Each structure stands twice: as C-alpha cells, then as structure tokens.
Amino acid sequence: MLSIPHRAPAALRPLLMLAVLIAGLLTGTAPHARAATAQDTAVTFRVEATTAGETLLVTGNVPQLGTWDPAKAVPLGTTASSYPSWSAGVQLPVGATVQYKYLKRSPTGTVTWESTPNRTLTVSPDAPGNHDRWNVSPVSATFRATVTTSWGQNLYITGNLPDLGSWDPAKAVPLTTNSATYPQWTGTHQLPPDTTVQYKYFKKNPDNTLTWESGDNRTVVTPPTGTLTVNDTWR
Image 1 (spheres, rainbow, N blue to C red):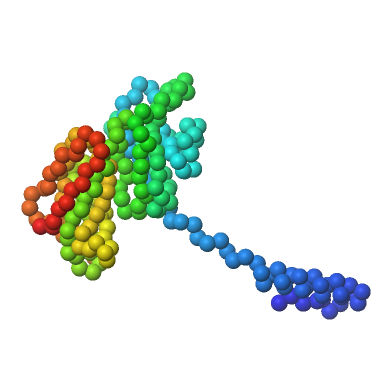
Image 2 (image 1 turned 90 degrees about the vertical axis):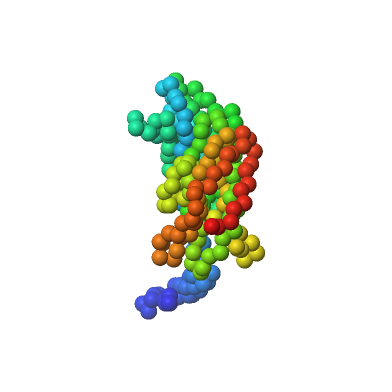
C-alpha cells in the first residue's frame, strides 16, 4: 500500500496525497497480463527437387514463411545422402490453415516459382511434415475408418510413403472423431498423384502401446488430379 512520508513538509502534503490517490487508481485499473498466444508446433517442409546450382526455399501466406516475399522465404537444406530431398522446420500456430509454395533461387539471385496452385496444410501437433514434389500438385486424400475404441485410445494411419510416415508409428497421420460421427474416424493428407499406396490403421493405447488391425496391407491408387476418399472398416 502507498503511504505519505511522515517527514514531508506540510506544504507538499496535499500534492503527495493527490499523487498517492492517482497511483492507487492506476494500480487498480492496470490491464491484466496479455493472454497466452496460440500454441506453436514445428512443421517440417520437405520437397523432392533436382537442382543445377540453385537453392530451395518455401514461402507462404503467414509471416513465419515470409508472407509471399521471396526475400523473406525460408531456405531449405539438403545433404549428399538426402538429395534430392530438401527440408526445413518452421514453427507455426496449431490449427492454422497455411498456403505455401516452393521456389528456387539461382546463384545470381534469379527466382523461379512453382507453376502449380498454392499448396495448403492445416497445422496439427501430431501430423507429420509434408512430403512434396517440385511442380507436382498433390491429391487430397481423405481416409474414413469405422473403428470402435475404448476410452483413451486414438486411431492412426501409416503406410509405405513418407507422406504417411513410411510405416513408422511415430510419424503416422492421426485420425479424429467426435460424438456426432463416432465410430467413424477421419483424416486428410496430401499424397502424390498416380501412385500406389499401401497403408494400415492402428490404435494407440493410453499406455502408448499399439494395436494394429489384422490382415494384409490395404492398397489404393491415387488419381492423377483432384481428391481421393477411402472408406474402410477396422478388421
């Protein structure tokens, strides 16, 4: 609590009392701390692209990707063992829908953009990073699976493509459900066109152990363009 010094001269006491009153009012009406910002998560952008001395970059409609400004685009890296795969991690807000594109920059500074439409992703803390191909428009694949689960179990899909985690459960694509759609679980991910995809579903238990569905790998061929919707039932 603010107080007036006992030894203050009498002539100054009214001014000091006014200062104390104003300070108290300001203290009582000070704004609360700013609310926490949205949770961010690391999204890995990967693209298969051959080059002739150029470097690869990614830009998009959010500040973290340079807001379509090539000078502020995020550079991607590669190594002798991973080429022609280029990648970079970017912190993006969970739940955001991001449009993006890749570009090449020559040693002289000439910029070449992909000629395909803008790519789109919805940021999820559990989804793997994108695996794109230079100048190839992906197919938006929606997987719907009818699966009963116990409390605390969640459903995932993985497969033979990097886009689905290359059979690594830690990189699998999560499916979601709600009270209105259960026991149907749904997940959407971009896949390469004209490609044979092998895949399988598994449940992740509350103790992080996995329960795989039985039977052989499932198979589907993506169309040349557009979208793909698959409807499955757990086996």
